[in-house]
Image (tube, rainbow, N blue to C red; front, side):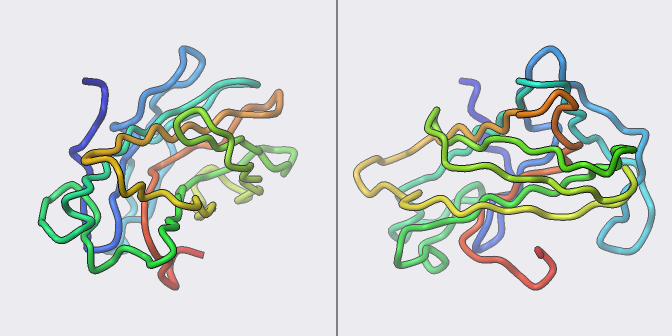
Length: 178
């Protein structure tokens, strides 16, 4: 199976790193731009360097329904954190140091259905990382035992998309996510 279920898990989110992604031939893993780790240290991590117009990156998310209704698993969102409105949030950590300071918008789809666009505004430098997010309505279907969700970002401008460090599938934003 192409579905990656080895994500880092917390009680309210699944984190998929750049190394977990699948992408088209014009997109590549990069590591030349530094990132500041949670401990404040500057390190070089793998990120996704999106290509031009139409380039894409996918994260394959496994949402385990048994976990949503009360069982436990290390790679799924737990029931206590499941929002009552069945909505969730896709949070992307990105850098956009384009010299023209223009946004690098991407369409966002879930299982082939367009859910919106994220603008990915300039971060001034490729070493500055920020978060952009989009809400997915009804992301926890109650009929499936395991629902694999394919999250795809597709660049919508000639310049392509931003650099993507990770995607987080979460049920709530923290103050650090904005």
